[in-house]
Amino acid sequence: MLDSLNGKSLAEVKFAVVDTETTGLSGSNDYVLQLGVVITRGDGTIEDQFVTFVRRFFWKPGRLGAYKVHGIKRSDLRRGVRPEAMLSRLDDYLRDSIFVAHNAKFDIGFLTGEADRLAKKLTFNGPLDTLRLSRALDPKRFNSHRLADVMKRYGVVVARQHDALADALGAAMVLPHLLEQHGVTTVEQLSAHFGV
Image (cartoon, rainbow, N blue to C red; front, top):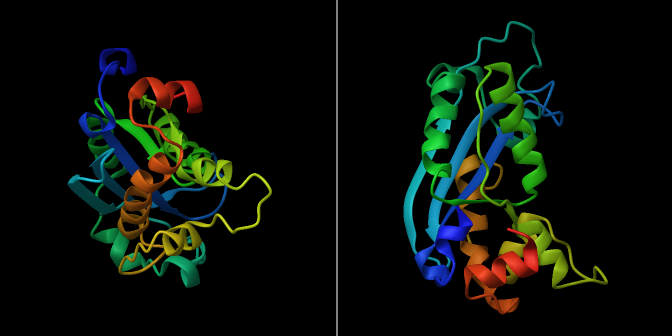
């Protein structure tokens, strides 16, 4: 996909900024509870937003993971879409966008786990990791690179943390700042510097 974008500025490129809220920390053993996707351009223009809970029928208590962190209840999941529909919608977004997440390895692990359980395939163009972009600007690690702290550094405010859409929106809003600080303005530079 990126070859077809060569010569384009980042304002012409779509990024699918993704966040998941999950039952735990293992992409192969735990599950996605909520998915948030923000489609943005490299200049910060937001084109679309999508959020859904994922319908689950867990019978064991405690299977919702860190409730105190994400606040997701079983009643929220009953309003969600089936995992197959979540993956289908995500795949529509990913086809012509560069995948972005804060700690992308985490989200990709969960989304791949969901796809594997359903014998589906997702294609991740990229990925581009805002955590990695932030850390690269601070090689001696003087600063925290948690999403909330990166957002604070750039004056980005969202409604609440640990909500998939709010966190995806926060990462989408810091992305142009991080790219600018790295001096990245074209797809070729993005590929050269970050292997996207």
